[in-house]
Length: 479
Image 1: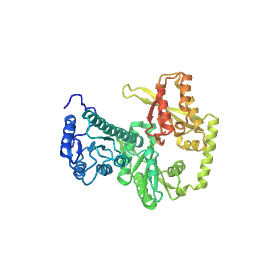
Image 2: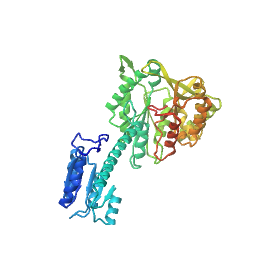
Image 3: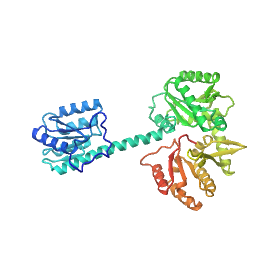
Image 4: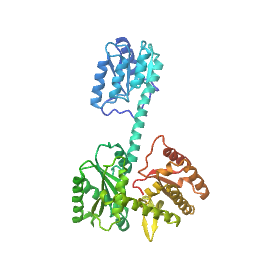
């Protein structure tokens, strides 16, 4: 191989055989010359196949696809007996859309080139007779384009998994649930089941995070064994199931599970736990409803009742109850804001290396009569009433006043409201300067229910915060 041609930095997959480059031309002399030049430069990395017509090329591609052999590139003549070059490339595009396609001919008209450009994503058009150096350079660029696209696709899949899956349990998270609910057709009748693990706070207080995680794992094992549906891990103590089964059927399945948890104790590290759950079941009988919000309202209202291990449905909370519930909590929220009772709580994070706290997670809480309420009671109301911006900035100011007096790193959760605020990054920059806090100490955790769009303001805000020097992470378990 000619020196200087080095593709070792590309993710060329050869476990099932060398990737294949296909050359197609009906003229034997031209095809042999083309194969010789391509092989001269690329034989160390690719197997070079030749085809005298489109039909043979399609057979080669079908065989490679069946055997899982990578197909990065095809170079095809236009004027051939039977299927023309543009028709061949269009047919290939239907089965191998990512394959780079190059047309090599001296007789192609503008219509043929345009057809391949519009319908086969033609990469380049090279006229015969070709210049060897130009052809070599074009092939190098084409191969790099294929593998750069492959790398980008893999990174996008990794990012999608990070955004839509719970990192610890590998179950779809809130973002995954939101995506799946949006993709369900309006004619498809489903039930959404939300499950709150009421053991969360008592177990965390008594035994810490590690044992609670083990309890969650045991609980999920039991849930998966008895419920043959997709299970979502939304927050630390909240899980969801989407089912197309009838409400009566899914109700009976969940009820049997609750009876099991009532009668049997879970053994975690030789400590026995009785699992206590609150369950809500709602359906999408009314088109256009926010199904998760409806289920969440039922779950929150039901969770406050004294009796656990019962199932609550949307009939438990009619529209009047919902309005009354929101009205009560809306007044509580407004009063708490005025009286300064929306406060940050600080959860220390211990370093595995040193065994000491090296950073803090800052969490918003509402305090009323010595009762501490997490955001699930007021966050959605803050969004719907439009005061989320005020609430968030109040929390941030209180947090910064604390951390200006120490060197700890600290994290703050971000909702969609902050990310859609065009001035949020400027506000953060100004506040950090005022309190003389290094941006590198501040970690912004993006909540799982935030939708990140490539062309949206939210991603722009994240990039601006990162440019300031702040760190960005995905909140694994919510608030």
